[in-house]
Image (cartoon, rainbow, N blue to C red; front, side, top):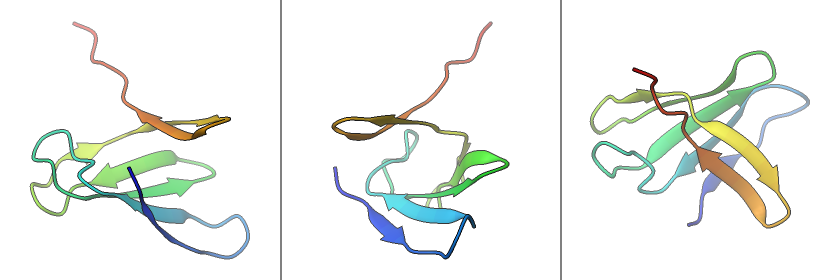
Length: 70
């Protein structure tokens, strides 16, 4: 899966889009990562809010989600 990244200077927020990354509707998922708040995403197609968990691996960036505990 490829992504589109928007460069920002210094330690400011980083924005990128995961094509077909929305778990609800399959739409493109814009993600913003900040140093203080972690990652946040909102699907522009269906409005789904998410907090993806990003992990740096040797093979690249892994994007996952924590499951809800009942």
